Length: 536
Image 1 (cartoon, rainbow, N blue to C red):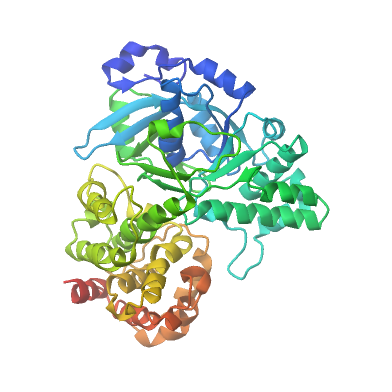
Image 2 (tube, rainbow, N blue to C red):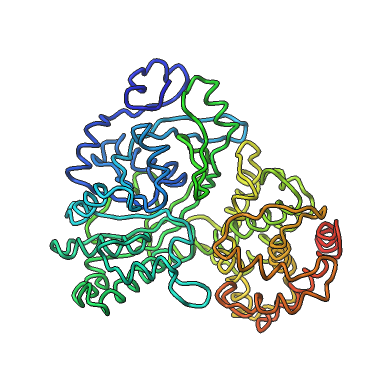
């Protein structure tokens, strides 16, 4: 069996293997998408192919939609060259159940794909022609949290952003710059309305996208590349909106063991790739069954009827409440704490860390006792019900091949929302920060992880992070087994408001984190001893 347009014509083979196939005319959908595009999307990674594109596939299957999604890549183009094109943009959706069963289906919602990374001028020309089409209702994103970062920790524009600002909308490189350029094309062609929708797992993602795009556009306006009328178009919610969203589906990197299982079933070309820039990809996407997507309902040009396939549309406040429940209390802080300590203890999978008594105690206290105390209910599901599902169904799914290393990626970009909100909420509600134990342990665990030495005293690999070089340099100044070398190094970091949202020393928790960290560097086994001391 081959996951290609030609391959899926052998329906009997796929049926015998229990693999569902598209029940609509894929060629017609692709043609309709070219002539009357509805949805453009930046990024073609795992969460997009396994969840977002899956939703449009469901609408196509129910005949509620006739057009698919066109993907745009500003990265290295590996997703297009290695995954999408060889498989005619089909994806093998692999849902991993707790008993190890794989629910499989082929989806075909991706109608076309273009590379906007300088390697294909023809693609760039075509996309600039597509962007003004009045039929386009939304342009969306799964580019990770760091995709919206346009300044460094000192407030200076990143080198690629500076280059884009100086060159104008003619030759952008960064995704945010391309976004501003395509909106400029749209404005020039008649200023048709459109929604710009981030699906990335970061706080107020729509606001982040809007602020970044407007910053680029205003820099261009100051240099004469665009005019004030264009800035007004971007700022007018009757024309361009940036809805906030909250997405939740654990989608690990594609797993080689699952690839082997698929190959053993007779499915060809299921290799797992790692691109030159470190992206992990495969023609299949392995993911959990649970899924949530909440979207602020602001679409000035209409939208696909995603509510028919389980998407929840609400107000900005509704999205904010669900996001804070997930990102700041019930899931992401727990995942981060598990991942950091899981790396330090050498665990291969998150589910392995869930067999560790001290780590279970850590995240139970963090979730049920410390974070839950200050989280408001989004009403869609209560925080306690959501947290119960996390412990009973999701983090304990041993069949789901999620790794501590994946979750530890880009922690510097996540830690402000995953822990900083709870600290602020305690202050606002008059709760004593001295009552927090698991949260400062999680922060101290991040610092200990950054030393790149596991609890046995051996060197370990650190996951990618935009601040990795700076953080590694700073942490290298600490002498292992010398707690007296800590203060000079940690104080500037724990005082950094960009990373934590506030100065942790002024908040009254910085010294606690520093002291816990000191306990963790007294020698091999010190991390475990510290957790036992506080978590039993």
